[in-house]
Length: 65
Image 1 (cartoon, rainbow, N blue to C red):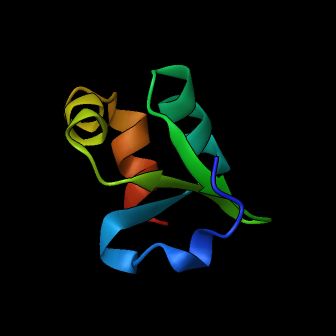
Image 2 (image 1 turned 90 degrees about the vertical axis):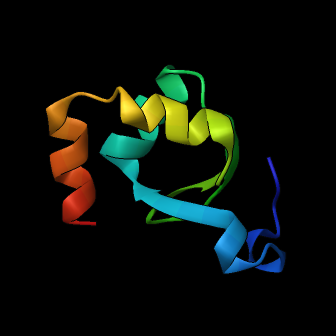
């Protein structure tokens, strides 16, 4: 995990609140960093593959982040 998450350009990372972030971690997406509001993940092929098969509740929560 990277401590200085702000050094990573925004186009290479994505932020998720705790419920979605926890689900992603539990399904094998590596954590890039975290702060008081949630988790950061690298935009990668694995990240998008996992999200493609995510349950509807995860996709709904992502719309409100």
